[in-house]
Length: 275
Length: 361
Image 1: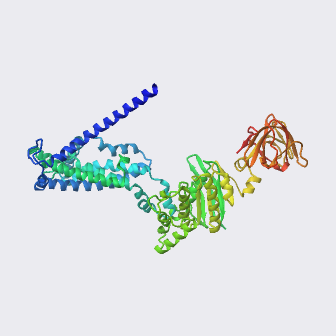
Image 2 (image 1 turned 90 degrees about the horizontal axis):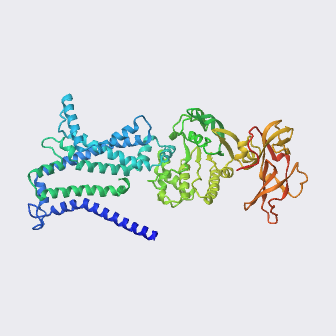
């Protein structure tokens, strides 16, 4: 009796879990599927069912300078911010994992903080900081590409620190000692033994960081200058005036780029393992 | 000439001395084993020799040169780690070549040396594999090859067999010993396994609590341990508590008078008896200095031998080890038998009144 009841309750539980998982997955995927579908609609004003399908909205993207420029700025910002994030995040992760020093916990929390602080708050405070800094130094900071990149670096750092730290856990310290025992200086040891071991974490951190920077809207809104916007902002501005499938087509491109980055990352390190 | 010399080597962590005043010398081509329980300072000593731990005081000399302050990468020692510490992203051949590349040898020379070393550890044909594609025993041999390829002035082995299963361990023990003999390479090994130590070493250093207790050959440690710790740690002994009453006479707490070959004049102490040096018989055995009657408490069948625990008095119990002969009779539990041994079989260690009668393995 009890056994049967237990088995039935387990079966119910299993189906409930599957249903919940399926619903969540649908919830996440449905908007993406709709956006991709919309991008091929023929009618300018979105209505169901579509009159037919076309590729002209993709061509329309390239007629809009705003999108092309925004794309270039986003790529530039993302790439440079990711490189800076790595340059700062990798040594930070190494120090946090290996050294015991005063304020270690505090610094760890600080480096992960940009993940928790809402983008709007981050954007506002950095904007205010830029104003103060420009007044103090009379350098052109507000709305500059440098200012934007610096802010994006802040968003990239937590991902680099987190993922590199995760890969350091699996590193056998004895391999580094073995290298030194065989005649390698600490510097050579780092490049020949440590770096290859944490490469998956670095690749994953870089790609996650890039994706976060590339898709960032809220913070960037405060920091872009006239005539220099990122792709997400260009999309937002376009939406204020017009609602046609061009937007969907741009989104499809954005999804494709991010998706490609994820697939490439997965080749180096199983994403399921680090997230 | 001594290849490796440690002089009053000491490592303190705050008040705690992990290694205290260790002085020893290893001859060229000698296989020295540091033996002791975990936490006795043997690994710290090895890591000081390799350069990973800086000594608080003392001197380390390798080949006559003072290397105390030299960083690990300038010492030319070959260390085999307990975890092997192979480079997981490099092939077997690249692992072995690593130290040679650090020495900037030519491509051709490196290839020749890698092939030669892999042949030495019987891993020809495995050069292109990755470490994770090898068994534990093979990984161990790669680690050994990697350390040997640089032709180190000193080979260091840190519990190299502890990650192998029992059967393989016995085989690798002999292999390493033969290889070391063939190459005549000065070697220091650390282990807590006395059997491993006894089969592999030329000489042993028994350590406890960071200090050296005794240095000597297997026979020296077994036949004439300098203190109770060594007698306990190397081989087995039964200890009987009591006091020395006169020249060559020991009285146990249970009141037994035992003839012993001790030069300890008087005072409290314990008498150590090796189980295989004792004889067991129905009646007193002629020619033995001691013949004491006792009751057989317990007989344990061990295959090659029998362990017989015999109670000689209320507080004195000894273990007698009998070889398991085909025609031998098994003593009956509860029977009264005589335990006999010559005076020279009993060693007296002063002090330390511990409860008598139990075997320390």
